[in-house]
Each structure stands twice: as C-alpha cells, then as structure tokens.
Length: 187
Ligand SMILES: C[S@@+](CC[C@H](N)C(=O)[O-])C[C@H]1O[C@@H](n2cnc3c(N)ncnc32)[C@H](O)[C@@H]1O
Image 1: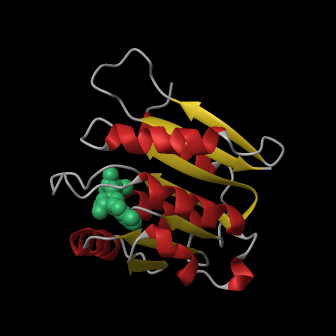
Image 2: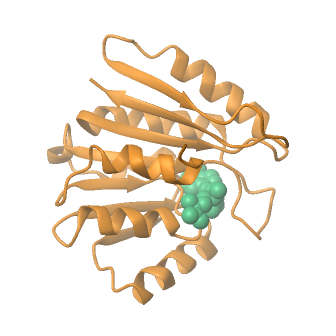
C-alpha cells in the first residue's frame, strides 16, 4: 500500500499532463512544488502559494538547487488565488495539492484554516479541467487542526456527486492522528 505522500503524488501523476498549469496551495518547504514542477515539465507552470516569507524562501532555494524555472511563487493566501489566475485558464488547471497544518520546524501557531482552505478549493474547482483533481493531505493533530478537518469534511461531503467524486484514503490503525488524503475528482 502506498504511503500518504506517495499516494498523494500518485493521484496527480495519473491525471496531470506535461505542459499543464498546476497549483501548490501550501508550498511550505517546497517538496510538493518540486514534484509538480517535474511533473508538468519545462512547458508547464506551477503556481505555489504560502503566507510565510520563510516558506517562499525555502521553496525558492529548493527549486534553484534543482534548476526548476517553471514555478511562480506567490506570497499570499490561497484564499486569494483567483487573483493570480487568468481567465483563459478556466477549465484548464490540471491539478492542485494542499498540505494542511503548519510549516515543519517552524511556528506551530501559523496554520491553515477551514475558511481560507474552502475558499481556495471553491476557486480551484472553477478552473480545474474535467478529470482534474484537488488533493488535500489533512494533518489535524496540532491545536486547531481538528476544527479545520471538521470544516473541510463537512464541505467536501456536500459536493454534488454528479459533478465530483470525493475519495478519502488513510490508515485507520495508526496512532497519534495520522494524516489522511481527501481527493476531489472533477467529472
Ligand atoms: C504543512 S505545511 C506545507 C508543507 C509543504 N507541502 C512541504 O512540502 O514542505 C503548510 C503550509 O501552509 C501555509 N499556509 C497556512 N495558511 C495558508 C494560506 N491561507 N495560504 C497559503 N499557505 C498557507 C503555512 O505557512 C505552511 O507553510
């Protein structure tokens, strides 16, 4: 069985094509951004968001070390991501990924929150291509994490099944609030 990290990437590898535009909604230290950059290749583009300068700097460093030149780093909340998408991208975004929670080895009080995450999901769904996917890796063991998890679950469970398939993937015999995946597939 694939780990949470491997499966989150696998779900995107299945549907994202070289040359597409994709989104890392929470770039953090840049690991998913680097993965997406390689996935879409030189002709593609990655838009990567974070609200912390430290995260943007770490991601920038990682991308430079790997000679990636197809990423636009945005120091802003993913709640505002529509401001960074041109109208001609509507129906063309290949996929997106969120890693919820706090930046590892950093200030644990700066966390993703239900309201802004849901606003970002809503915006991305509008721009997503048919058969595109949004992947959420839900960490909820930290303070405030359970509130965001509950808000998000309530939202994704209510998405119209005629338009979207919503998958939950996780290991149910692990201790200490293990992360799980929510994948939204646009039909
Ligand atoms: C779990 S970390 C991401 C880890 C990252 N995927 C990696 O590979 O290192 C979550 C990140 O979300 C960021 N974040 C929190 N709220 C945000 C928001 N509203 N918009 C964008 N990023 C946000 C945090 O600053 C933090 O860096």
